[in-house]
Image 1 (cartoon, rainbow, N blue to C red):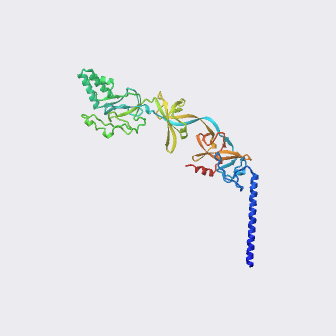
Image 2: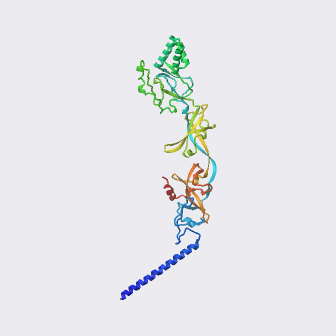
Image 3: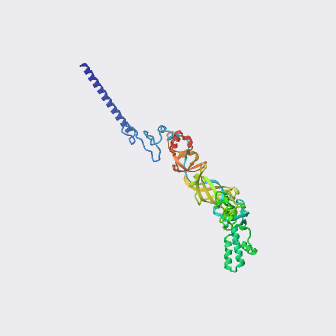
Length: 440
């Protein structure tokens, strides 16, 4: 009986203690709620228990730490010091203001002079035969209009000349004689050559081929001297047609690997032996940086300086813009149309081109931008502490034109924003890891 009484007494004591603790907890919670309401009656970010609710990122995209409320006056240095270093940094570093100015940017590139392929005219033989004498033997040789290029032995052409001479001796029909003469003209013979045949009364052993144009001889239309086939036969078939000259006049032509021809080689009908370019207009092939590709466009005027006469700059127009990736580097290659009336520009001579562009965008000093891989960041000042220190937050931006002094910001920064002058001093390892994780 005594044991039961003792157990009942212990249970009653425990119940009283638990009730007392519950009343004390309710009193403390009520007092804390009243104190929170008295401390900041207009703050709507607290719940009834006095705990701070997480806030969403503001309209500027700045992140805030959950469980901590940003002071409305942005002057609580103790609060900002608790944020991670890769999000917010307090520093007394000098700040600069992003300028919104309309500036003329210049883009420089280097290149060389090349032949304008649109001005290359091909010279083809109209009958097959063997080259007995060649007067044009090397690439870029200059020839004048009417100058002798080669002497060609052609059984087919000799047969047509004999037919013309026979008609001129035996027939007095002017129509028939004119048709025979016209046939020789279509085979590439000049009036002077036809008159010479008429006076001599016999066909020559070789026929001279003259240049119908004036300019530089090219064994390929681009002037590179290789890589462009002529559609002719191979060296192995050079003798195939001569054995049947009495029955067929078909002759297989031949070319060397660099598309050049030599004496003793055979050419076929309609084979292109070389091209002639007057070089009165030239191409300037110039490479710019990849950033210049967004500004350079066909029709834009550039200033070109040649190494041959640097004191006399030329003005040229961009004809084509082509992004190029070569040797692990990406750049923009443009084609310039250069006037060359006196042929003062020479093939493969070096050029320096400069193009200008007018753009209106925020510009900042080059030291204010820090590059983390392919991402560029700046530190924007979002406030000032009571002690006068600046509060900076990192922001990713997109850069445009840049040089050693200034950088153009095309996205992510507004004009008149204040940023840190030296971004590299505010970056730590956490910032690098954060932005490198965003690079795909």
